[in-house]
Structure formats: C-alpha cells, structure tokens
Length: 376
Image 1 (cartoon, rainbow, N blue to C red):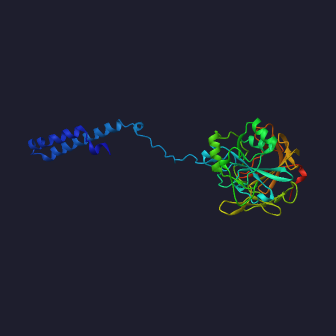
Image 2 (image 1 turned 90 degrees about the vertical axis):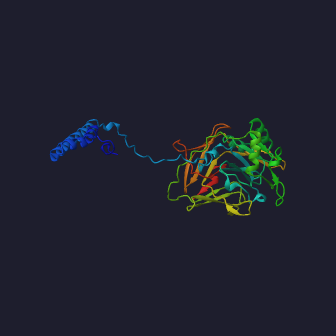
Image 3 (image 1 turned 60 degrees about the horizontal axis):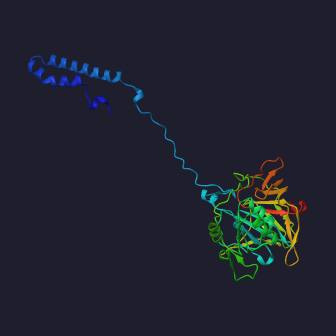
C-alpha cells in the first residue's frame, strides 16, 4: 500500500494540530489564514513526497522469479533383460533360467511367451529344447521342466542367472558344480516343483516364478549382475523386406518357422506346420511371437551317449561366429561373441558396432550351419 495513505508526513501532522489555534486568533482574516495553512500543507506534503522519492531504491524490491513447472522424476527405467520400461525394483530381481522341454509330448508348453529371452538348441536325438530367462515377468505356470545341458549353462552364466532344471546330462551336472552355478535342481528342491496329473512322466514337471523365487531367496540368489543386450530406444518405421524365416534343426517336428506381423511388429512362431501355442494356467492359449529373432551360427557336434544310446548334442558356445538378426521386418548380418563362460554374449554389426535389438522378447536359436537359416 502507498506510504502516503497510511503514514502522513510529520510536517502535515504538526500543521493540523495548529489549525484550531490559528483559526481562533485570526478569525478576522479567515481567507488569508486558510490560504497560508493550505500553502504550508502543500509544501509539507511535497517535502514528504520528495523525501520518499529521494530514498527510493529499486534494488530493495524483491525480484519476481519465473515459475518453473515441476517435472517429477521418471517412474520407470529400461529393463536390463528386455529393454522394456519397468519399475526400477525389477532390475534388482534375480534372473531365473528355466529349462523347458520341446518334445511332441511336451506341447503345448507354458511360460515361454512370458520369457524375456529364450535360447533354443538341440538336446539329443534331433529334439530341440528351450532355456527361458525371466526377470520382468512372474509367470504362475512354467513347464514342462527338463534336464540341463552344458551349453545352456554357459549362456546363462553371462546373465548371472539361477538355474531351474530336473537333473541333467553327466557333463552338465559336473559343470554346475565346477562352474559354481546358482543351482535349483529339482532333485534337491522338490518343494518348488510339482508333477501334474494331466501328463505322464517325464513330461509333467511344472513350477512357477513365485516358487523359484522362494528357492532363490533361501539360497541368497537375490540379484543378478549382468550387462544385457544393446537395445533400441524406439522401433523405427521401416518397409518390411524379410517377412518369412525358416530354421532347420532336424526335421519336420522340430524345424521352426516365423512370420512377420507388421501390425504388432512381432514374429509369430510355428513348428510342425502349426502355430506354436502356449497354454496358460487358466486354460487360455496364445501364439508365441517374439519381437526379435536371432539366428546364431554355432558349431554343433555329438557329445556323450545318453541312457538310450542317443548322442547328447554339444555346441562350441565360447568364441564367435556369424549371426542373423531379424527385427522390424528386416534382417541384419553381424557377429556373435562370447569370450568366456561368464562373459555376456554380444552381437555386433558388420562394422563392429553393437547391434541394438528392439525392446521385448528376443528368441535366440543356435543353428549348426548358415544354410540351416533361410528367409524371404
């Protein structure tokens, strides 16, 4: 509020006090007296105003600070495993690797569609097997769970993952001990697994993320230290040039086929001439459709004989080789590399730069030769 409105100058106050006395003794000349008084008041008021103006200092007036809109901190971060946006707490969870069977009697499987990464390779006798990695999701139905193999162990070590399986080949069981794997073998953790009645052994062992997480917590497997794949920040809009992929593993029942679906930017998987469906615990089914399909050319050879007289498959997983990465309806050639058991497997393009993958599920298949991968 203006100073003059609440605090009249001191000179003005004195004049006002003299007013009665002046009018009393000089009543004969009221006009002259009042004129003199008015002049005094004007001069006093002017003097006060001058004093106020002469002491005005714009520096003492508070500056009006511009208002900045509050921007809350981000509530999500990129998942280390999948690149998808997740709560920061998700990256603190352990990565869980689960061996899932793919024999004809094991189909449809449960939980593959919810995995962040799936590795696919031969087990024995031309039969393929999957190793699914979980961190972002918590499936309530996983299976059928089957036995371990050495090359899957080498792949999971790069993700510092705990390993869920039912027994394994002699070499794999020896490697689990020698390589100090975070082991959750069903043989020694039976409470975390169950045998369902709708299938016969050995195709009936199932588990869940919650059950495996309890085992991990009891063993101190509470986190995983790994780098993860290079991931794209967004899906580029491209004209699809590669819409059909065929992976020849061993024959009709185990060869895989993928069809690119532009509407969802995914690759719908088929095997044995039919869509590869997943069975959820509630009875619903969904077709497997990863965002990225990776075909690694990995030397494969016959390992030891199993109890039936069939050779276990074995792969040279340490080293490097060529790779084909299918995403966004296109294909890119590059190199895969894994220098040691615990090293993270990486993909680089033809110039040696990291080959970034779309965020979402990556399906990685180990193929014995370049000719076993065809596309159009």
